[in-house]
Image (tube, rainbow, N blue to C red; front, side):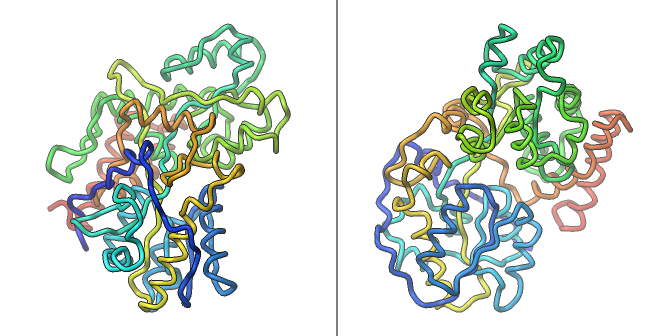
Length: 412
């Protein structure tokens, strides 16, 4: 297994104020192009443009389960997928399993006009090209807050206070939403909250987990307090289900991905009273640490290792076209905080930009973070359901992570 070192973002987040000059032409080489990735609107736009460039034989599998299938789909020889659209966390598994190739030669020959800040490097090698920034931040109903006379929350304590007022006023029974589906989503919410407490995931310079402490308890207790204002089925609600709750007018406050908020603010899928009053705020805080309880992300694309050079070139060119300034138009501009030249921030983007401005922490990209993420997602539900204490849950997480880290050679 490859242990990642010196992974840099290529100052991708600095690109929010930078300019770029990707090629405007969409000439693609002959070859096979097969894309796997997530399914939200920005990625759908990138994939659509890449497929248009690559031709009739190209295909894409965009699904919320992309992280469950991308490694297996790129392990064969030849790989089923020639490219995976990834983020901070999901690239780690692809590198550790050695299923994606360095892009250095392809960048040198076909991507000299890709700005340096979009090149994601690992140990000095370009392994991905970032095309957008993302973060979770507050989304709120302006009209509902006005009804209870509350200011826009800046902390989770504010959210809890507003939620209680909304319920007591009889406006909504379950005014808080969140992507708390057991598994990856739930682990991500803990990751945000624990960072917000000022906690460190691992003992410095080691793979030894360090969450079984007062900050870990604080994070869990805050999550449980929020869950008491959520739909009783909150442990089944991923981003899609949470968004549906919002559009149905059942939710007034939630922590949501910037890449998902565009559909909440357009005039489709919900009543005017909902979409006209849907607003975005910055990242929330928890406790007194002053640290934003969120993580910064980039999304970008890779090229599979187990494919021919011809297919690698075709894939590189197609994905470059799919993430070029040419995709920016009235429809796509609000879908993401794009890292390409010509991006003009919209109202819907303000939450991500506020997260960047607040100095939010990038999602940790150490090779063993994924093991901790899995342990978190597998164990937190028991606490939220009242089956065990916060301390026992943290001990269970620690034990599960430690066993996995030893099995994978990160701990002795």
